[in-house]
Image 1 (cartoon, one colour):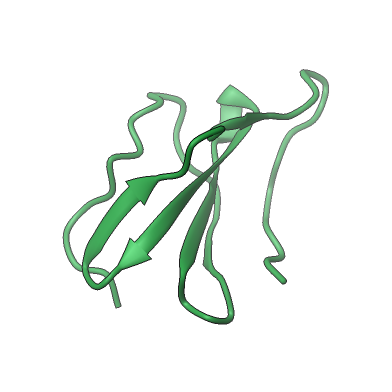
Image 2 (cartoon, rainbow, N blue to C red):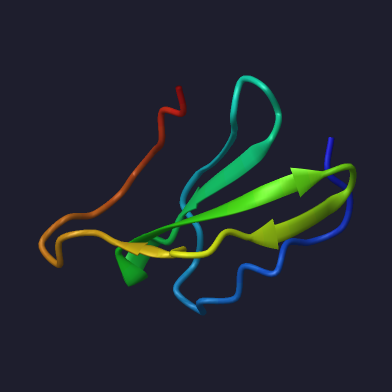
Length: 68
């Protein structure tokens, strides 16, 4: 379990967060910002991956994630 807070500061609110099955990444939907941000998980530390966040279509509204 990650303690503390993530560096996720888009100001639009997160909707959902999921850790990958191998616990190596954390993906967060960005709510009103229409993005998905992914972090590398190393112990209790998070590092935003290059190329992240990924923009979603403007008409979309992310409400959850499935991480495979």
